[in-house]
Image 1 (cartoon, rainbow, N blue to C red):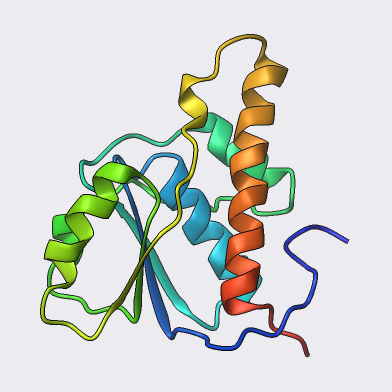
Image 2: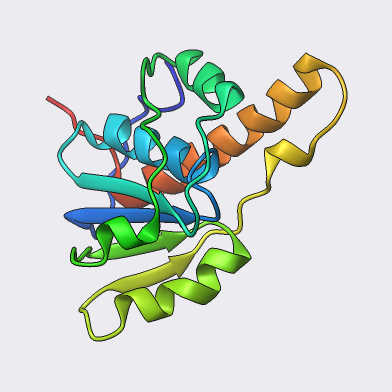
Length: 153
């Protein structure tokens, strides 16, 4: 059983989630793809960066390892979603944590911070780097599963 397939029953399930990181190239797009899979596409999920980055091949690789093909969308910036409201906004970097309070001001939004390591700073062999990305992926899987559970037929 893949780590994104194990069933859980959450106490509260948001109807919409926005994941925010610095550039929307690694952590937040991975979280978006994972949340879609874990929730069975029953929750509206998006991801953005404070700045628009570029697609990261290692992030796409570790998602493919668990059956998520084409899960990384073109990077988007926070201003692309200024007029949308989300039940939950999850920041994944300290920089994003400091900015999301402004974004959600006045909206009935729950804000949370999930400190998530930056795998792009890891050096060494390709396998070393992939292991860092896998660690981020697996940590996000656990948190998302705890938050939204999984859909079961």
